[in-house]
Length: 394
Image: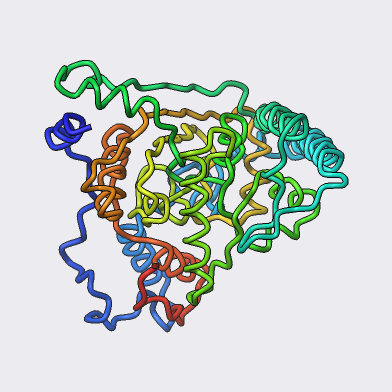
């Protein structure tokens, strides 16, 4: 791993440079991001352009434009119209059928079984034997089937091996010991809700979800079978610490117990347009267990599958109306932390982030969820920006 870090130093990741005309310290800049007087179209357009430079990680660059409301060429309008009356209804019917089938499988497998009621958890990941086998195998198959229905007919997957494992004979014993250790978590960049479907089809891990997900019809039971850890995004109280503790325990359990599901964590904390990699939160790295970095990309020509600055309904409709969607996945070698990284989760997170940015050709950006809300607020025409302007996302 030390030799891998040396390679990173010789191959630095791209970092988004701040605009020299702006002071990043928002407390020193009291100018509004949008003019209070919206009568000036030119001024509003200039402000939006200014925002797009500052919040580039959330800007849509596809044919459909900002928030999916751009002016479409005639050819695109015709293709969209045809898809709306043919492809969209078919995909909705087939997609919902797959979800219902998996829900019924989960319902049958969890009959007469009590869910785990531990802190921040309410799931069936503890089930064993044939029940767990059926849930996992059918879940992986149906997740891939759902991606196929949505238009991901083929997924390009690349598995990168560590070229440094056999180079240093002095550390051969250490590498052999590391290879016997099981990773505790999968860490992935976050581009879309489609990320979860891919990871379900690939490794069927547990993941962190908003508490409201557990109450969604059909999806709620499925998330419980995955063994999700539920959080309240807006909570800043001791509840957050409880969630961090549960995640750390689950990562440690997966690391030491081969039958426990691994945790899937998106350390950025929100989605981007797929070209950037935001700062990592330390939750996935607190346990000091090895992690598997995975990089997702969604190449496109017309509509970008990235869920950045577009509403959920609009995104789903346009996605289902696109005849073919593409996904590229890069699996990096398991990252085994050094003792220094185990003692310093922030260092661990930063090193993994730099590795992923370098290998995935992603631009590193230090903005986060608070800035995303500011950008969305500006796009929606709100003159009074949210109070999170002067706050940092924890």
